[in-house]
Length: 504
Ligand SMILES: *[C@@H]1O[C@H](CO)[C@@H](O)[C@H](O)[C@H]1NC(C)=O
Ligand SMILES: *[C@@H]1O[C@H](CO)[C@@H](O)[C@H](O)[C@H]1NC(C)=O
Image 1: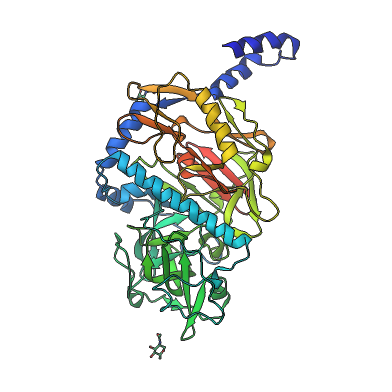
Image 2 (image 1 turned 45 degrees about the vertical axis):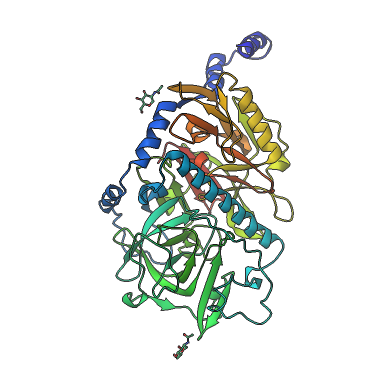
């Protein structure tokens, strides 16, 4: 109230005659957001009682674009449906709290692995200098001199994949659910014969029943672009390690990939993993959507793709789109656009030009260097589909958290949960007004988050936490909790990232 009075007082002295009532409404509009507490709690119950098979049946009826074979680039757009992890894989958690803790543990493993990947790239350590983890070395023949011990962290996490998409692999196509991952490049599926395969929902891919399966010769560009490759009988072998002890290793091959029933792309380089450990339980493998040379969008020469992540507690599906329909025209449409920035040390990650943050309509005083990439390729902000909670450098996080706490003094606070230090007991409320958290980009562009994208339930009893976290590293990550319900477009041709709220 004090602030409104102040604006009214100032107005006669400034040139406020324009449309001051309208601009005041806009200020008020962005200052707070409504969190529907009952609705969020209802979804936590619904998710745990959800029966996944209904979801899969629904997908079979998905309408397929009529485009036929896609030749060397995407001139037609097409769409795949996306599902959140917990709607595909029947939850084994006894309650929502244990589900939350498992999600957060996976998330920390994810962040560590992204940081490790960047670290190695900056230090110029090619992954091929690393000795593959134990049990793998007998499969991959190391070249001479490849004996540096890698910083492979052992881990017991079970899956950083949060969103899945169904694609067909081989001829005739065998349907496989793959984790979508903007933080890595190589697409792979578990393959027979398995020396070690984890449990998956679909039948494990059998190369001998596919007429399009072809090995890749050592020394070809596809093979040498791999971070870790080796040769066996003239054929290319690959290994991808995800930094938390999980890895996949096997033959690097080319296959036909089918979307829906009719859109096919031939000769896509994929990993046929015979030894797969750790992450991704439930899925058949991974769809690499990073910006590197072997990533799926790069291989199919798609100039743009977009994805929309449904609320993770929602049981509905959303979509992943490739092709021109995902392109952004700067300034047009409902998308907020920001520059897409390249890191010359590592082409996998999608960096974004973030300039600031505001809470309740007030800009935080965070030095721009907190968000920018330094000369060595360290720091900066990436948009990632696989990280859940947005990570900010400690000073930026503290300033964001303090402003949010200041604006929520009226709410009953409670003790922190896992990596969250700011939590509230909203069990007695149906809905609450909280300060709006907004990302700011160059040219005055802003992306205001809905309240449910930063105040999330951690149990079914009404405990909600502020869903941001500090990171000790220099890399900041915009996570998928903040992206929920927003269509995120990666327009590679125009170097733009777009955020379109309510476009799932
Ligand atoms: C909260 O959501 C429920 C269910 O979607 C709806 O019936 C109710 O009106 C919403 N409450 C508010 C305050 O928007
Ligand atoms: C290499 O090829 C030979 C002849 O085709 C085959 O007998 C042998 O098993 C192969 N080695 C491996 C490791 O696959």
